[in-house]
Amino acid sequence: KRAMTTAVANQIRFQCPGCSRSYRAPGRLLGKQVTCANCKTTVRLGDSKSKHDDRGGLEILPSRRASGPEPVGDRHAGGEHAVARADSPRERRRRIREREFNDPNLLRQLDNAGNMALIWALIGGMCPILGLFAIKKGNDARYLARRMKRPVPGTATVGLILGWLSVIGFLVFVLTLVASIAVVALRM
Image 1 (cartoon, rainbow, N blue to C red):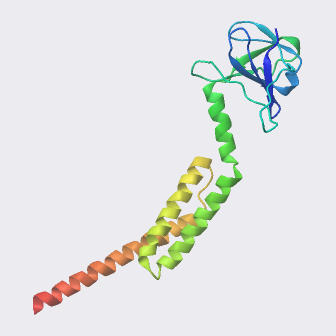
Image 2 (cartoon, rainbow, N blue to C red; image 1 turned 90 degrees about the horizontal axis):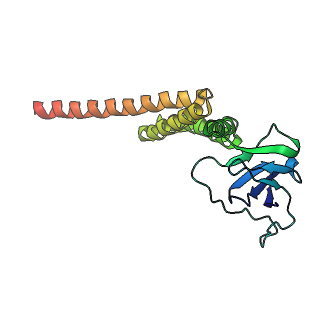
Image 3 (cartoon, rainbow, N blue to C red; image 1 turned 30 degrees about the vertical axis):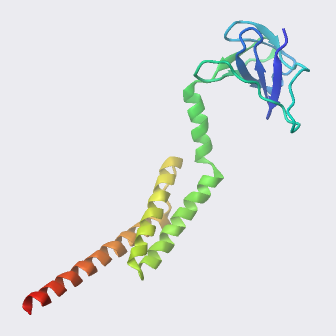
């Protein structure tokens, strides 16, 4: 039997003709036979009847599978009798986490949050209300660092400390001012 296939970034998507379940397999299995893990139907990958969409790309076939991980071609088996198998949810989460640890966008956000925390804290020394922005950016940097399992940037820590000092200093100033006005008002 032949399966309807599509190629997506060095992977082949195919649908088993026996049970209509969708699978992904490595591109190296193109032209080879694989066995469906669900119904044990043997299919040959690489049908010339693959569907193309209007943009010139290949269309991904709809899946009629139950909830759970999508089966993927066996990465270790080669040759004629590779069996498609499912990724465990733990493996999928591990791959996502590994991408997050080294994601350049998240690294840039972490650096920017740390730098902005320091900048807002320095401005907050002159206008204490802006110390709240330093606290927020410092906490953003701490969250990103925890998420990426990296150390918190020093600029974020300094920004947090200076932000809290400016806010606390402002509150002490306001409370002292209110107390002194109250004392003066009581003496009159």
